[in-house]
Image (cartoon, rainbow, N blue to C red; front, top):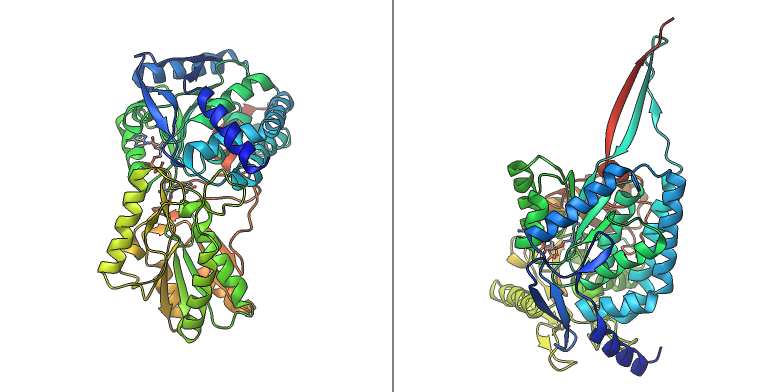
Length: 498
Ligand code: NAD
């Protein structure tokens, strides 16, 4: 696709994007008939009307999922048959790669080069991986002795509610759908009101791939309406939530106020990235450190936004970071050459520029960026911003900004770096750069985070768990461990007569 083709196709797609809910295997308007308008952050263009799902729609979706679960059309299908459907779904996603990528880019503003090369393939791989895994997972027999046969089996839970954010709409949905569907559950998925389109399209592709009607239902709508109704629902067995720590807290409240459903939260982050002076390739460390913060407009939960640099190399390293930051200048996300796109909406621009103001006010020094820019008229763009001389107590070092803002904090000793890195309410990820093997092991053990990267930040695979310590969440997405969230553990004790 050349750039013109992308924009032309994008406009055509935007005109036909279908924002209706998907319940019981078909597209439906919301029960109330209400909709909300969805605009693209690229340039403010209207993408269409989206069903404003609420309690009645969630009730219908949960009932549809429950009926499917109880009659066993999916829950009792042999794992090898479920595998075939999920692998076909992954194939359909790859076949529809350009359409899905365009929808995602239009919806939430990330560059088309990333939705094409990363979001769609990674989402498809996730669905495929869980499909292929599910007929290779064995249950257990307990070592109880000769008088009994005690089976320990994992069973699907029933109806799983999935509530996902807008920063990786398709990927976060896939991280929930892959394991929950593979395990045999029915699902009601509530995408973010800021990015509903790819989730709705995935449900159609799943039906085409052979997923029985009613197994996957998608209800778009606002968090306090559709999201709250789903999380409070008495017939939902588990909630897989990805989003902010503020809303994740409410998920536990909803469970407590309703049926004590299982709650698995994947929440915010303020990840620490420690660069020791002994690391041999400082330019690679600088390029990766900048890229990992500015990728996806800085709207990544695991972005390493607190950069701890050893004082003896700090001036030189900050200069390198500023140089690499310049390469991330935002452009039209539909232009295949743009490394950075638009923030998701005006509200996010206001939040991010508010934090930039707070950083200045509290005495940090802007060495790059620091303002809103306008590469496309009517769009939501902020320049990649680097602050130097940040204190670990400043607002920009404590709170998740969720935009292209990097805070550089200088340290002297290893102990000081570890103490500051761990001094955060979050614990999603962390990184360290060193050429000493013993330091790499020592520091990575001391860092309180779900993933610790050593001498890299971007490497990743569906085979490893993703999730956080502390207020970054509980439970883990990805890997076989995610199956634990969407299954109940059953003991069947059979007495054997001698
Ligand atoms: P958010 O918490 O505002 O919204 C997430 C989802 O929850 C949306 O679908 C929203 O509609 C819904 N929601 C909002 N209020 C609700 C309520 N009262 N009841 C029920 N549902 C409600 O988060 P966001 O702004 O969409 O996403 C950004 C956040 O997600 C960041 O904090 C980021 O770190 C986090 N995130 C975490 C991970 C992870 O794996 N740990 C991955 C991606 C994003």
